[in-house]
Length: 125
Image 1 (spheres, helix red, strand yellow):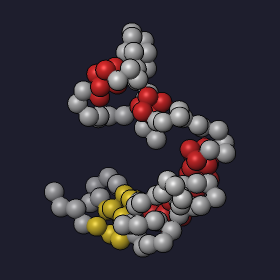
Image 2 (spheres, one colour):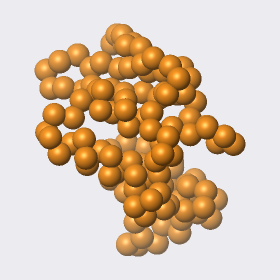
Image 3 (cartoon, helix red, strand yellow):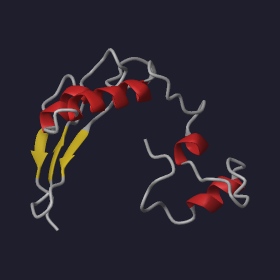
């Protein structure tokens, strides 16, 4: 989730947040994208979707060999709420492999990550 540490954003995003009354922009107030634009606030408790995702990433990353298949298994997880079905649904997923000195690779689904194959997409510059 995008919070306070991001490199780029839409032009005028802070002004838009001020105009909508979502952020005062007063000196020293941090621009926290998720807190400002998330409906109902941000839940980072260990049993929240965010907390479960963080925990699964940490578990897979501990080996130092985190890879595409690990990320796909996280995106397909139902118990955590990462892959959602119901009134609010996951409609697609994307996994990117960005390695120094190599061409980026991107795998995407067109449907739920648990019900479809992640297909490699070639993106040409």
